[in-house]
Image 1 (cartoon, rainbow, N blue to C red):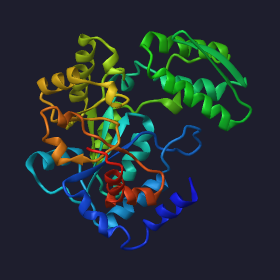
Image 2 (image 1 turned 90 degrees about the vertical axis):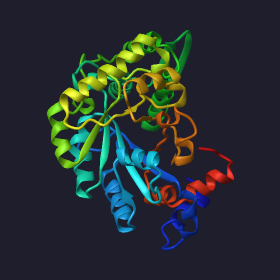
Image 3 (image 1 turned 180 degrees about the horizontal axis):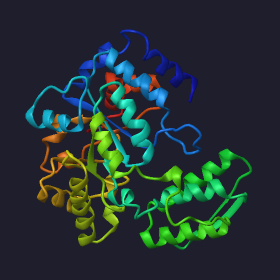
Image 4 (image 1 turned 90 degrees about the horizontal axis):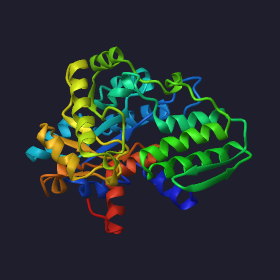
Length: 343
């Protein structure tokens, strides 16, 4: 982080510094997106529980309205106030989300909605991105050449940072190729780096159980559907897309007490879903859907078209308190205006 940016973010914590920007969030709610939570003695990266605790304490102290995702959709649809409204979501359904995340949010009486990949909880899948992480973390080799969709990729590293760069680049490249090419490349990666992949997700990549999900409901966590196998919906056939959505929703309704009729698109880029998915969600009676593209939930955008409630944006949860303040205070909205970004 540059010195100027670091100083700017530190200024966000000065009492009263963000007050002039608060009006810029009138008609907008802030929805945060989280994934893994750091656990003791685990090598898998995740959100630092203490940083989340500091953020939630700040939001409570400053009297932000911490509401459920359903409440955000209700407020937008009914024209209710959105000022200082903040909601939290979690994606995928990992075990640490139940064992760490649910307790963190319950500690601050803060609603949180977790989107479950139902086939993951049923132990039907081992996420391909987790397979890549497992391969890179278990190899003793320091270089690799591997094919991906007809292209030869080569990486070399001699320290952990270089290994991380290689892993990130390979993972990102895998997102934009067909599933058969992606899975073939992961298999070739394992072979080239001399790593035997287990059939099921190892403990550090394992899902919560359905029983744990029901226990989380007692702590205030709610659940929404996130497909069965976490595919790139825009890359699969019509019947597959419909089945992924409907089956995950039906499975969720059979296992938890109060499923949320809001969908979450896997991967969440705007290119990862389209009108086909929106139409199907509407036919099933969903209230809306969330993506992973950054941005605020705007009342103006929400009412712009019938599809708008199914294209709701979220912010990735920040790793510093100062940046959290920037997002919820209106400062980030001011920067968007300067950049001439629209909702």
